[in-house]
Length: 118
Image 1 (cartoon, rainbow, N blue to C red):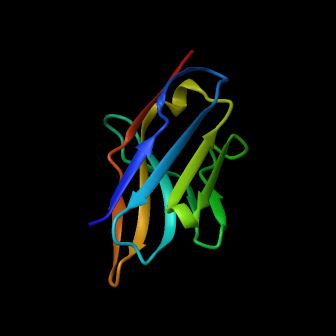
Image 2 (image 1 turned 45 degrees about the vertical axis):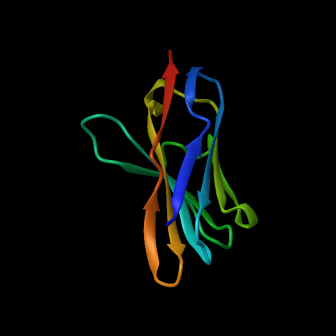
Image 3 (image 1 turned 30 degrees about the horizontal axis):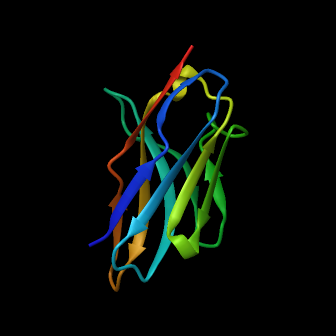
């Protein structure tokens, strides 16, 4: 089985920074796309940033210029560097990976809370 485990969430003041990490473990041949999503109560989960296995990235308009997604393919790990945080960034952040074990399947982490105080 494959597990994605996030770390790095917490409480930070507006204008501060946090770095999230997500490590995948288990029987993995390769991981295609990886991404970070976030969700607040009562709203749909939204895509924050995504990165392909080749390193191409995309971002939600709300985080462009403030967040940076990166990955270490050798470690099956994806990162999200979050700078200039705003109270509206408060959410549970989820890691996603499209994992190839033989067949391909989508996997999600358990989520990590990010709270930005004003």
